[in-house]
Structures are given as structure tokens and as C-alpha cells.
Length: 389
Image (cartoon, rainbow, N blue to C red):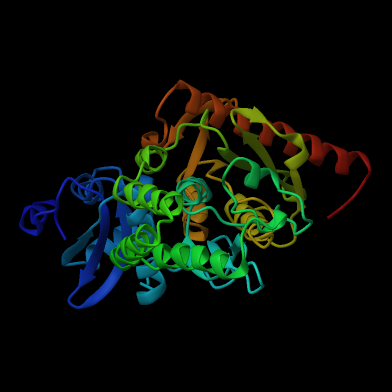
């Protein structure tokens, strides 16, 4: 495909999901705040650096683009997950042992919980933890539900006290009514908004007819919220990553060795622009001890074999195009690389499109500097003890 082909597809400046296709075969599915701007971005000059060789190859194969417009970015996020699960496009696929995709799971119990799981689940996949976190906040304000923090002790949990849980913990809601609430959540996650709205309208009329005006008013508020979804936070997530944003997690990786001896890898973490040393991790390299690119691949692969660790919103690797490419092949999480000069001082961050403000740059460089310091210290420690890995 060429950028000159875009005009014939008549992409709107509206949220939705886009499908890169070759004939009838869907190659890649994505979602956007603006379908027109997002698809256009695939034909920028730095596409190789910003999206990697796999997406470049996809663009070479694609000969058409289709789209499905939605009323909100939230609905685009959910539609994207459903379509990826349905079609499993080859260029959306991760390696088979990569467990970093997130899912929303509805538990099977008397009062079902909604929990976020990795690798598999009821609804998903959702590639980015930040987006899913914001989506759940929006949905929960419309349809409160029980989560893992809600214990059936007879006392209201914290979320019940602030209106984000219907209160099965305190006996405020029956099993029947709670399951009706969960059914509404399910319909929304299944992308059946129209069916959900019709169901709510019917329920509201029945309640009003029975003179249950307070309950009918509650349904009316849910209908209004569904028709006026407030997803500004999701729009921010979709437009890019601003590192002072609450909950933003950066993981930086670096390798240290001398001529392939005592080779180690490390992971450091910056959250909300500040280091979180309790989350740092060390890795003793097992395979190609004198190949920094393969060493990084080993470290990242081992890191993503820990689904219990929180998923990062941005990955920072030390090096150049080689390190950037290997990280992008292993994950769909956004990646930047910090290149160095002859004195090993930070020279450039690639791709530059990931840097949206000075705070972003500061946090990226902080994470990278911490990774370098931590790797050197770990390497020196092993050398001082006379270890040979």
C-alpha cells in the first residue's frame, strides 16, 4: 500500500477500529481516536523506527483498509479486542510463549467478580495495561461490580462505600439483581451496546410502571452515561504516553559484561516519574554471553515469563536499532531505545515520536541511567566474588 491510496478509503476523523487487509484476508487490526490520523501515521517516514519491521512488512502486503466507526474510544478499545480474538490476524499475533496480553475475566461464583488476568480470560486481548485500567474505571462508574478486594464478610468494602461496588459484601444486593448487573457489563464487553440500551430502556419503563421511581432514575442515569461516555483519559492514552500520568510504569533493561564473562542483565522500574527499587530485577545470562542483542532477547523473554509482574506501559532498552528491533518483535508494548556516544553518555532517544514532553524524556533517561548503574554494580559484585556464570 502507498499513502496515495488513503483518500479512496474515506477514513473519518472519528474513533473506531481499522483493518489492514490483503484481499479478504485481515492482516492487522488496530483502534484509534481518529481513524483518519491513525492510519495516515502508518505512512510516516519513521515507521520502521516507531513500529518495527513487522509492521513495515504488513504494509507491503496490505492492499486495502476497512474500518468500523464507534461512538467512543472506549467502544473502539473493546471492539478491537473482540475483533482480534475473532480473526487472530497474523500481524497482531505475539510469540506463543508471550503471556503479556491482558484479559478481563468474569469469575464463576455466586457473586461473580471482574478481575484482570494475563494470557487468557473472558474478554480481550488488551495490549496496554494503562488503557485497560482507564476503561475499567469508566465502565465501573456506569455499572458497579465486585472485584478481588470485595470480601463477603457482611461489611461494605471500600469500593461499595464510594459507589463502585453494589455491595454484595454487605448484603446490599441479592444474587439475582447482582447477576443482572453483571449481564449488563458482559453485554458491554461483547460490544452489544444497542442491545444493552434496549434492555435498559425496557427495564426503566417496567420500574416506572411499578412506581419504583428511584430505581428507574438509576437506570436513566446509566442510559445517559452510555450515550455520553466520558473517555478523555482513554483519548490521552491513545494519543500517546505522558510519563507524569498516574500509574505510568516504565521498565528499562541493560546488559553488562567484559568480553562475555560474568554477563548479566537487569530491569529497573520508574513509576509516575520516580524510581521504584523494590521492583528491580537481576538476570544471569545463560546463552550468548558476548552478544548484547541476543542477551537482551533472553532477558526480555524471561521477564515476560512472569505474568504475575505488572505489565509496563513503556519499555526502554539501551542500544540502537538492533536492540529496538528485538524488543519490538517480542512485545506490542511501546519501546524506545537510548543510544550512547563514545563515552557511553545518552545521545538520542529513538523513535522521537514517543517523547511528548520534557517529563517523558526525563523519565526515560532516568530509567535508562538506573538500568546502566544497576547492571554495572551487579556485574562488579559477581566479579568481586570470583563467580564465572
